Image (tube, rainbow, N blue to C red):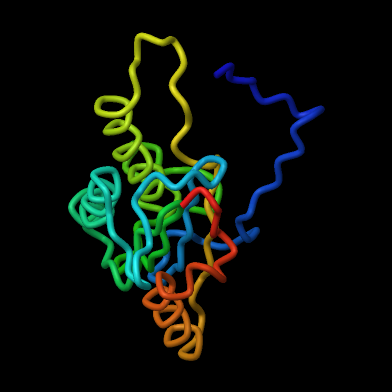
Length: 181
């Protein structure tokens, strides 16, 4: 796999972040992280329930480890799906980062740094246990970015966990469903 360097003339990347929003403040965020090309890497849906394979179990462990690496967080509902992860991460203590840069001492505890840490943990496992590194090309595990939604009200706080919990039973209708499941 040949990596292409970012070229602003052909890669018109736009930030999904809200301008002027402090992503480190005490708030709950609904996160969706998709695999590269929506490949089903983490298991299968069987009778409306997610059955994790070894990679899915590692993704689950890495997700549950987020508060260990970022003590200012609390995890709420989440699900590891065949080709994506849905979860709610609550920041419980403000850390003073802004919406565009980490803290200067490298200890940023923003949602972006948490997602990045999760992705790195899963990717390291894939590189060590799944892909042969001698081939010279290691496929990507994740899409470049992730989706996030700031949970701003009580209605969202109740609707989103229900969506997460029911995601496996709704797999055939899920927008991330792929026939390669």
